[in-house]
Image (cartoon, rainbow, N blue to C red):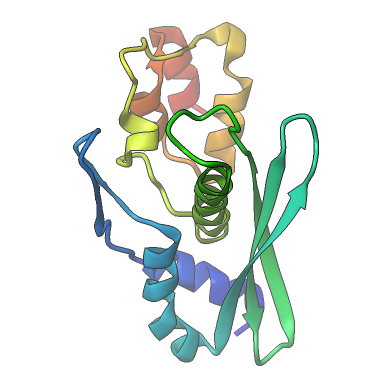
Length: 175
């Protein structure tokens, strides 16, 4: 089995429980640690292992670039995915180390999610609208939505997150 075939099988089989609870938002979520723990049995089955590495990019708005990588022991090859997260230094109620830790945790989770195609539409980051209206998808701004679907995204994901105008919905359904 090639490295790409192994990753494809893992993406299909992979499940990680949402073992964490946010009492403020009243929702369950999964952490990077939950994802990594759920990968351990898969490592042995497919003869792969996963790593997560971070790079700090100093700037006016500091950034953490995180790379999640699956290494294939049999083929001595790898496949990686990244997430880039800004560090919010103005986040109230947190000391600077907590601000960096929060951004680091978030980046790890999303780098792993990008690699494993984890759909977090039911997580608070996707469903908590903080009282805002959903952004609209119309025929005028449909290109990103089409690209999302072309890359394996689900129409239901778009429908949960966006207000899709009827003409745009027909375009998305018809490809």
